[in-house]
Image: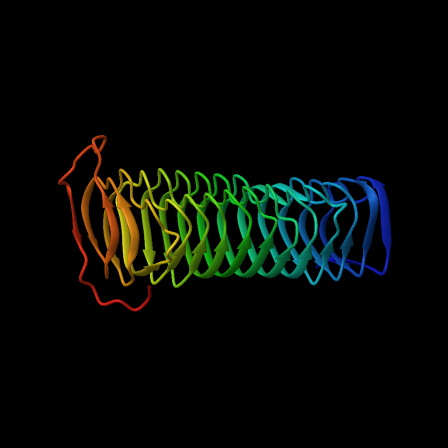
Length: 287
């Protein structure tokens, strides 16, 4: 049975250090550091965090209907089995070095440098703004229902599945491995450079120079906006695109099927000039 701490406030350093099996209800944490450090089996309901580093080195924490203010930067690091539901995070650098993370109906309003080096993550109906470099080096990520505004997302991430997302993100998916995106919109230049095994299904893509230097790129039933120029340089791919493509430059091998192509550029620097078959007679549903 958990000890219940209700309608209280704490401040200063380490007020609940190394406490196990507690439930916090309507508790406020005023300025200080490491309020709940080295704890296990913690539940926090309708709590407000205004302190730095509150949940470092925690194991088995459930956080519901709570607020992490801008002063609670770097709140949850070096942790295991963390769940957050129906909560708002206004602080940057929120999650790092976590094994087992579940987020549901969470809004992150300043998500820069968040979710670094985390493993085994599941996100449902999450919104992240200001999320530059979010998910760097993440492994085993399962996302359904996601809005992201922030550049350089998912760099060096591995084993990622994303559904029903809108990503406004320059340089998304750089040097990723084993990423699949379904039924989503991806806006931002230099998408997916240097990726391996990137698969896009029923996706809308915009932004200059997408999907270059990719290894084993798969596209199924995708559309590309007019600003998607100079696409696929030095990529190996199998792409079925149900729109026109503004320009294709120096693809390496595989095939590209699309409605039409504005320009095909095969210059003297192309590594394999005849290696990629380009077929421009697909059914066009967008232009």
